[in-house]
Length: 261
Image (tube, rainbow, N blue to C red; front, top):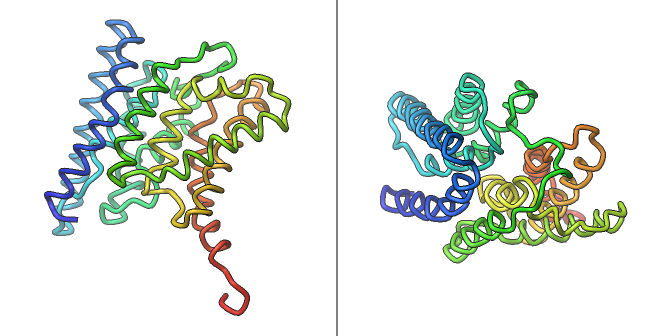
């Protein structure tokens, strides 16, 4: 990917992520919105700082995806988090989610950073708790969907993963007896996580059928985690992580034919 394509890629992702970020800022209130904006500046500085350090040592360009990493991480947060924990998580996502692979991540760096934060700082407010006590936020979900449409039209999003996630969440809702399963699309960060993390080409399965199954796994896991965990976490980060880790296996399984192992 040349510099022009890289800039175009980054501009599209900024355009897609700006509306949900604006909705987050509006819902936060002035003080919390200010903290989120400062964290965004820190996230951008860390993303570009680590990329510049590794790129100079390897003699390669920075590569695309840095604004998406920073904005995606900040959009996924339900509210204020600890500065130290956020810096460590962002650095981990940058280094182990992107730079050690030569700037070509195998999973979205934002997903790696958020997963690290949830494992390492479980009390750090990186995920919504008691999600069944939250009201659905259709405006946030709608702006995520609008951004996803922009990315899909330009070939920057694996839309099959999003479709599969909707089907998987619906199927899990029916099987588990969740009467209002459709409301989960608007609760917490499910919309953003499915569309901007799970359906990101960086971590999505390659084949069409594999992408549908990948999405179904993510959607079903969101509801299973929410119903099974007594703390009722959001669930989308772990679901997206597990789905991304299984994506290559799904590709392999669906591409296999007898005599062609």
